[in-house]
Structure formats: C-alpha cells, structure tokens
Image (cartoon, rainbow, N blue to C red):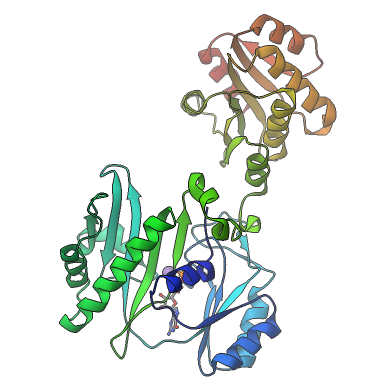
Length: 385
Ligand code: GDP
Ligand code: MN
C-alpha cells in the first residue's frame, strides 16, 4: 500500500525525523491560508502516488499566499502526468503547503526489502534530487548499499559508514546516525516494504531535513496498523484493481490487449509468458484463486472485459478446487449480463469436470474457441490480437 508524501511525513515526524512544517489543502483558499500561516516562501506540492513530480510541474516554490493559491488552483482537480504514471496521469486531490527550506545539498536515503540479502538494505547517495534515476543508471558507483542484519538491526558503525558515505561533516554524523536509527525503527515497526527520502536536504545552516518522503507498506501486514489502513487513497489506484481487490481477485492491469484469466498465480505467469512468446501482449495478470464460485468467475471476466484495450480473452484453467463447469457457468453469466462487453475467447480447460465445462461453453452463444494445448491456445490468441 502506498502512502502520500504528507502521510509519510506525519509518520517520519512521529519517529523523530525532522520534516518541514506543512499543511494539507484540498482547495485553493485553504492553500492560501496555509501559506499565510506558514509565512514567507512556501512550496506547493501535488500529493499523488507517483514520483517525478518536480520535473512534471507538481512542485512550485512561491513567495506569497496569493501565488500559493494560484499554484494550488492550477494543480487541484487536474491530473499529474510523470514518468512514473500512465499517459492519463493521476488525479491531484490534495496539495501539501510547506515552509520553504534553504537547500545547500540534496542527498538520497532509502530503505527497501531486498530479496537477495533477505533483509533491509539501506541505499544512500550524495547525488540525491530529481535526477536520482539517471545517477543510478549512469554512475552506479555513486550509490551506496548497506545490507542490515535482521537479527542485529542497524548497527552504530553502519550508521557512521552511511553518514560518511553521504559526505557529511564530523558534526553532522551524529545527527545522521540518530536519523538512520529512527528510520530503521520506523521501517520495521510499520511493516514498510520501501521508504525513500529524496531529497534528504542539508540546509544552508547545516541541519538535515526530509524534504520529500515516500513509504510503501507491505499489503499483507496493513491489517496490523489501523491508523495506516485509514490512509488508503483509492483515487490514486487503477479503478479495476480496486474492484478486483474488493472481490478478492488477484488482478494487475498491464498495457497489452489480451485479457488473461487463469487459476493459480504460477500458471497465470506461465500463460502470460506463452502468450507473449506468441506475439500477444497480455492486458492483465489475473489469478481467480482456488475457491471461486460462479459469481466470482463472472466478476473476473467482467473485470477483464471492462478494460477497453482488451481485444480477446485467453482462459487457461486447470480444474481442481475450482471445477471447470462452475467456471463455464460463470463465464456465460458474465456475458449474458453484459452482452455489449463481449469479446472473443480462447479457452483451454483441463481437470475436474472439463467435459461438462466445455459442453456448457459450446452450447452457449458465446464466441469461444476451445483448444486442447497451451500451444494451440497461444496460436489462436495471437491471431485474435
Ligand atoms: P519529486 O520530484 O516527486 O521527488 O518531488 P520532491 O518533493 O523531491 O521535490 C522536487 C524538488 O523540488 C527537490 O529535489 C527540490 O530541489 C525542490 N524542493 C522541494 N522542496 C523545496 C523547498 O522547500 N525549497 C526549495 N528551494 N526547493 C524545494
Ligand atoms: Mn523526491
């Protein structure tokens, strides 16, 4: 689950990490009031679940409440398109109004769960700021990676190693070490999967401030944090993915034109690979899951067909707990409910009650091609794409 910058900063602040003073505004006049209360130069920051705002017009430094109001009016209600969003962008419903800070240096500090070291890795760089992706691409030696032992936790010497790696002076090393300890404590306590402060600013008077913040929480652990659960913002997510989650269907939208319906995550990935190899680009990943009934199968097909990019649907089912006849009835139900959404389907069905399932489909008036092997399925679907 992704958090907004202002939510992430509330949490940072609870853990003693310095952040600029700020207020969230949902209207231009609230933005003006917030700017007036903060006084002086303020920064107006679009709150969206995507990075790259600075280079996309989502961050404005302004000198007066009037200018803050104007900047907020231009942002609120529009969509921000950054290199991390799709072409349609994400809606800006909140702006964060923050006191302007005087920046001497922009550093990068992140923590992420790393599968290869099976623990948290701290990522740090002297060359923080809006072009960090370029730094990582062109000069990876400027990025420091320190794995943390999950039993020992972040140790004192590692804190100092990171602080010196960031090029901080002797007197800043102590505050940086404390900041790192707090950050690690926060990461573990909130079940975070990713945390990023970019930039971690060294101000002109030499203090450290988190000028931007991004926290992702492990979806499977969110239930343990009531306060974090309440921070969810479905406006920032793909509406089909939100619907899928509500129906307990594993669905990830992709940008191809072949809808995929499969039972089992492994089989779903294999099916997508086979389709891709045959030249058909998957429009989604979808795993119906084990105990689906007709209603859930119908919901899955309706979801896939609600994506207007989808030209045809590839179904690959191995009937086990989910019987093929139940799946077939679910498909028929979905199409009968929403005729106008129908697109041709290629169906491979094996396992429990597959004969019955195929009969239901062939005797329905659905546009289905039944195939035996995954190979045939791939050929049939690539023709339709
Ligand atoms: P991102 O592009 O989505 O990562 O947004 P950030 O919050 O990191 O802001 C982008 C850039 O705006 C930063 O790297 C800074 O250069 C600049 N910026 C952010 N806050 C301030 C501020 O208080 N004062 C000044 N002068 N610049 C700021
Ligand atoms: Mn940033």
